[in-house]
Length: 237
Image 1: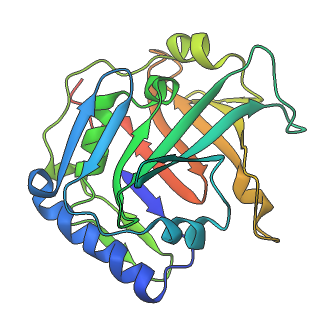
Image 2: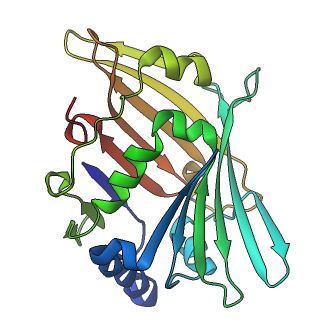
């Protein structure tokens, strides 16, 4: 199950996001996916503006790069300790948004480290499952029904493979049925709206099966966007 939480959805911003939601019903007509070292989602009929992301997240991206008439925004998340101090060796991942000449979002890319947590097949299936998702207006939340999409047969990430990339967690909880590892990342943002400083902190929680050590669930908040994925419901393994 995928859960997406967007903050302060009102007026025209909400309408544009609702248009994207409607496009999901015919995914292949409105979107395409490119996978190489990164994962890129391309918007064939761009709707959302760059400033919509500032309105929603209340913070600026780490970097803005101009490429002719087009602009890309990079969100750089760096692993930190409990005091939000960078760790050595450096572990980081980036989200990059690409905007066209009309300042509308035309692509979004995720860097390789993030794909170690959410492999491309799981990420694409999670995005596709948003089509027809139930809208909770009070909580500003979408809950997708993954029973409508084909089950995946690709391997689920394991604890050892993730630890090899992310390093040690900042917290570990264990019970007979689950082991939860927590990792903290800090978004490098040059400007955060006062009162929203916590938006720059991303705590990623990974839940593993204590017997198989396979990843069961992932949850985290990234620049105001909350994502939760239940791997058990996406796979047939």
